[in-house]
Image (cartoon, rainbow, N blue to C red; front, side, top):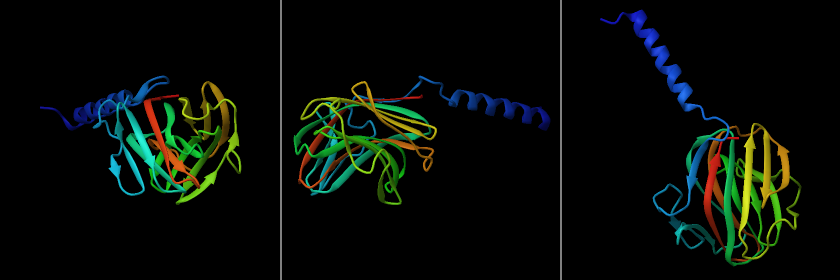
Length: 209
Protein backbone atom coordinates (compact mmCIF):
# COMPACT_ATOMS: atom_id res chain seq x y z
CA UNK A 1 0.00 0.00 0.00
CA UNK A 2 1.33 3.45 -0.92
CA UNK A 3 1.70 5.70 2.09
CA UNK A 4 0.51 9.32 1.95
CA UNK A 5 4.12 10.55 2.16
CA UNK A 6 5.22 8.35 -0.74
CA UNK A 7 2.13 9.37 -2.71
CA UNK A 8 3.07 13.03 -2.23
CA UNK A 9 6.61 12.35 -3.47
CA UNK A 10 5.32 10.51 -6.55
CA UNK A 11 2.87 13.33 -7.28
CA UNK A 12 5.63 15.92 -7.00
CA UNK A 13 7.85 13.93 -9.35
CA UNK A 14 5.00 13.56 -11.85
CA UNK A 15 4.22 17.29 -11.80
CA UNK A 16 7.92 18.10 -12.21
CA UNK A 17 8.15 15.76 -15.20
CA UNK A 18 5.06 17.32 -16.82
CA UNK A 19 6.45 20.82 -16.26
CA UNK A 20 9.74 19.84 -17.88
CA UNK A 21 8.01 18.32 -20.89
CA UNK A 22 5.64 21.29 -21.34
CA UNK A 23 8.33 23.97 -21.48
CA UNK A 24 9.52 24.53 -25.09
CA UNK A 25 13.14 25.39 -25.79
CA UNK A 26 14.50 28.08 -28.10
CA UNK A 27 14.02 26.96 -31.68
CA UNK A 28 11.21 24.50 -30.93
CA UNK A 29 8.33 24.54 -33.40
CA UNK A 30 5.12 25.59 -31.63
CA UNK A 31 2.73 25.59 -34.60
CA UNK A 32 2.92 25.00 -38.35
CA UNK A 33 0.17 25.25 -40.96
CA UNK A 34 0.37 25.09 -44.77
CA UNK A 35 -3.43 25.51 -45.07
CA UNK A 36 -3.83 22.24 -46.95
CA UNK A 37 -6.39 21.04 -44.39
CA UNK A 38 -9.45 23.27 -43.83
CA UNK A 39 -9.95 21.78 -40.37
CA UNK A 40 -6.53 22.91 -39.10
CA UNK A 41 -8.02 25.52 -36.78
CA UNK A 42 -8.29 28.99 -38.34
CA UNK A 43 -11.70 30.70 -38.54
CA UNK A 44 -14.02 29.93 -41.46
CA UNK A 45 -16.67 32.62 -41.75
CA UNK A 46 -18.51 34.52 -44.45
CA UNK A 47 -20.86 37.51 -44.43
CA UNK A 48 -21.52 40.69 -46.41
CA UNK A 49 -18.39 42.36 -45.00
CA UNK A 50 -15.71 39.68 -45.37
CA UNK A 51 -14.71 36.07 -45.96
CA UNK A 52 -12.15 34.16 -43.90
CA UNK A 53 -11.55 30.66 -45.25
CA UNK A 54 -9.17 28.13 -46.74
CA UNK A 55 -8.79 28.42 -50.52
CA UNK A 56 -6.56 26.37 -52.86
CA UNK A 57 -3.91 25.61 -50.24
CA UNK A 58 -3.83 29.13 -48.82
CA UNK A 59 -5.77 31.06 -46.21
CA UNK A 60 -7.89 33.92 -47.55
CA UNK A 61 -9.11 37.10 -45.89
CA UNK A 62 -11.29 38.86 -48.46
CA UNK A 63 -12.77 42.18 -47.34
CA UNK A 64 -15.63 43.97 -49.12
CA UNK A 65 -16.16 46.91 -46.76
CA UNK A 66 -13.94 50.02 -46.46
CA UNK A 67 -12.18 50.85 -43.20
CA UNK A 68 -12.49 47.33 -41.84
CA UNK A 69 -9.88 45.06 -40.24
CA UNK A 70 -10.49 41.31 -40.09
CA UNK A 71 -8.43 38.68 -38.29
CA UNK A 72 -8.36 34.96 -37.63
CA UNK A 73 -6.64 33.20 -34.72
CA UNK A 74 -5.55 29.64 -34.03
CA UNK A 75 -3.71 27.43 -31.59
CA UNK A 76 -3.18 27.58 -27.82
CA UNK A 77 -1.94 30.58 -25.88
CA UNK A 78 1.79 31.27 -26.21
CA UNK A 79 4.08 33.69 -24.41
CA UNK A 80 7.16 34.34 -26.58
CA UNK A 81 6.92 33.55 -30.30
CA UNK A 82 8.52 34.09 -33.68
CA UNK A 83 5.75 34.01 -36.30
CA UNK A 84 6.62 33.61 -39.98
CA UNK A 85 4.21 33.65 -42.92
CA UNK A 86 4.16 34.22 -46.66
CA UNK A 87 1.52 36.78 -47.60
CA UNK A 88 0.30 38.42 -50.79
CA UNK A 89 -2.46 40.63 -52.11
CA UNK A 90 -4.42 38.61 -54.66
CA UNK A 91 -6.88 41.31 -55.71
CA UNK A 92 -8.57 44.54 -54.82
CA UNK A 93 -6.88 47.65 -53.51
CA UNK A 94 -3.16 47.87 -52.75
CA UNK A 95 -4.03 50.49 -50.12
CA UNK A 96 -4.46 47.75 -47.55
CA UNK A 97 -2.73 46.05 -44.62
CA UNK A 98 -1.89 42.44 -43.86
CA UNK A 99 0.27 40.53 -41.43
CA UNK A 100 0.13 38.64 -38.15
CA UNK A 101 -1.07 38.89 -34.55
CA UNK A 102 0.56 37.78 -31.35
CA UNK A 103 -0.72 37.58 -27.78
CA UNK A 104 -4.36 37.73 -28.81
CA UNK A 105 -6.29 38.00 -25.53
CA UNK A 106 -9.68 38.53 -27.14
CA UNK A 107 -11.02 40.50 -30.09
CA UNK A 108 -10.32 43.78 -28.30
CA UNK A 109 -6.75 43.16 -27.10
CA UNK A 110 -3.72 41.98 -29.10
CA UNK A 111 -0.54 43.06 -30.92
CA UNK A 112 -0.42 43.31 -34.71
CA UNK A 113 2.45 43.46 -37.23
CA UNK A 114 1.31 44.75 -40.61
CA UNK A 115 2.64 45.61 -44.03
CA UNK A 116 0.78 46.76 -47.15
CA UNK A 117 0.78 46.11 -50.89
CA UNK A 118 1.96 49.70 -51.41
CA UNK A 119 5.01 49.05 -49.18
CA UNK A 120 4.08 50.55 -45.81
CA UNK A 121 4.38 48.94 -42.37
CA UNK A 122 3.56 49.33 -38.66
CA UNK A 123 3.61 47.57 -35.32
CA UNK A 124 0.55 48.30 -33.21
CA UNK A 125 -1.95 46.96 -30.76
CA UNK A 126 -5.65 46.84 -30.22
CA UNK A 127 -6.22 47.72 -26.57
CA UNK A 128 -9.74 47.71 -25.19
CA UNK A 129 -10.94 47.98 -28.78
CA UNK A 130 -8.85 51.04 -29.68
CA UNK A 131 -6.06 50.92 -32.29
CA UNK A 132 -2.70 52.22 -31.05
CA UNK A 133 0.28 52.42 -33.42
CA UNK A 134 3.51 51.67 -31.55
CA UNK A 135 6.32 51.86 -34.12
CA UNK A 136 5.34 55.34 -35.31
CA UNK A 137 2.32 57.62 -35.29
CA UNK A 138 1.62 56.58 -38.91
CA UNK A 139 2.41 53.69 -41.24
CA UNK A 140 5.93 54.16 -42.63
CA UNK A 141 7.32 53.35 -46.09
CA UNK A 142 10.01 50.75 -46.86
CA UNK A 143 11.32 49.68 -50.26
CA UNK A 144 12.08 46.28 -48.69
CA UNK A 145 8.36 45.45 -48.87
CA UNK A 146 7.56 44.05 -52.31
CA UNK A 147 4.65 45.96 -53.85
CA UNK A 148 1.55 44.86 -55.71
CA UNK A 149 0.70 41.18 -55.74
CA UNK A 150 4.20 39.96 -54.87
CA UNK A 151 4.65 37.46 -52.03
CA UNK A 152 6.24 38.98 -48.91
CA UNK A 153 7.82 36.90 -46.14
CA UNK A 154 6.70 38.48 -42.88
CA UNK A 155 8.35 37.72 -39.53
CA UNK A 156 7.01 39.01 -36.21
CA UNK A 157 8.89 38.38 -32.97
CA UNK A 158 7.26 38.75 -29.55
CA UNK A 159 9.98 38.19 -26.95
CA UNK A 160 9.34 39.54 -23.49
CA UNK A 161 8.43 43.20 -23.94
CA UNK A 162 10.30 43.48 -27.26
CA UNK A 163 8.26 43.39 -30.48
CA UNK A 164 10.02 43.20 -33.85
CA UNK A 165 8.70 43.27 -37.42
CA UNK A 166 10.76 42.08 -40.40
CA UNK A 167 9.93 41.55 -44.06
CA UNK A 168 11.94 39.68 -46.65
CA UNK A 169 14.96 39.40 -44.37
CA UNK A 170 15.09 43.07 -43.30
CA UNK A 171 14.11 44.40 -39.87
CA UNK A 172 11.59 47.19 -40.29
CA UNK A 173 10.76 48.15 -36.71
CA UNK A 174 11.40 47.18 -33.10
CA UNK A 175 9.61 48.57 -30.05
CA UNK A 176 8.93 47.68 -26.42
CA UNK A 177 5.51 47.29 -24.82
CA UNK A 178 4.38 45.31 -21.80
CA UNK A 179 0.60 45.30 -22.00
CA UNK A 180 0.12 41.69 -23.17
CA UNK A 181 2.26 38.75 -22.08
CA UNK A 182 0.52 35.77 -23.71
CA UNK A 183 -2.22 34.84 -26.12
CA UNK A 184 -3.03 33.18 -29.44
CA UNK A 185 -1.34 33.90 -32.75
CA UNK A 186 -3.30 35.04 -35.78
CA UNK A 187 -3.50 36.56 -39.25
CA UNK A 188 -4.90 39.99 -40.07
CA UNK A 189 -5.91 41.97 -43.16
CA UNK A 190 -7.52 45.36 -43.50
CA UNK A 191 -9.02 47.78 -46.00
CA UNK A 192 -8.80 51.55 -45.78
CA UNK A 193 -10.89 53.91 -47.93
CA UNK A 194 -11.16 51.50 -50.85
CA UNK A 195 -13.92 48.93 -50.40
CA UNK A 196 -12.15 45.70 -51.29
CA UNK A 197 -8.94 43.79 -50.71
CA UNK A 198 -8.17 40.08 -51.06
CA UNK A 199 -5.17 38.78 -49.09
CA UNK A 200 -3.78 35.23 -49.10
CA UNK A 201 -1.48 33.60 -46.53
CA UNK A 202 0.62 30.46 -46.72
CA UNK A 203 3.07 28.43 -44.65
CA UNK A 204 2.63 29.81 -41.15
CA UNK A 205 5.46 28.79 -38.83
CA UNK A 206 5.60 29.62 -35.12
CA UNK A 207 8.76 28.87 -33.14
CA UNK A 208 10.10 29.63 -29.69
CA UNK A 209 12.62 32.54 -29.73
